[in-house]
Length: 234
Image 1 (cartoon, one colour):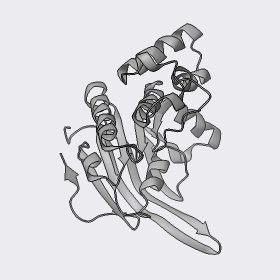
Image 2 (image 1 turned 120 degrees about the vertical axis):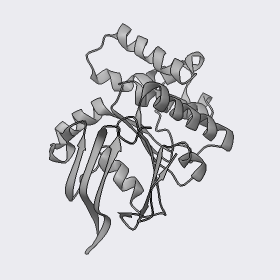
Image 3 (image 1 turned 180 degrees about the vertical axis):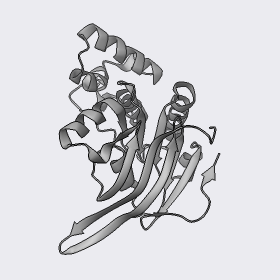
């Protein structure tokens, strides 16, 4: 990716802590960096370094103590809970380690879920779902339930659900952590293709160096700060 790419995410002096009993536990300490439009970023670091917390802040799932997160020109740290929920639904696609599919819904119905909040007709929703499942190579499995699919296939359904609203940014928290090596490689190849062919901006938390190698940029977090060593570019 061109290092001159326009920033889609601008993070400035971002701090976050949690209360544990009577103690305040700092997690992130005045982070400042940008994520370019169309970038594939991997966040790495030891357990407890703040990777998932940072991902949740970027996705608007959690709120920062201080600092700003501007995504697509909108400072999401200033939004109310209802505004944030609406912003998430329209701008963020989520890919989780354990898929988070609803067992009693088919692959088609799981992917369709985010579209139920839109004004699309039933026919329009079906068209969108068909396209999304075709992109992830599961057009022939749309009537299958999660329990009838392999782990890799379930993650593909989750990715189809994540891209169904054409989000500004995809956030992935250990997307290959529950998969065997072959399935993990297939999921990473799919994410790489979404980035390269569809220009999706991806922020991925991972502890797996092989997964991180798919990214354009690797940033290392340690004790709530970005590592002083130069970030890695591919």
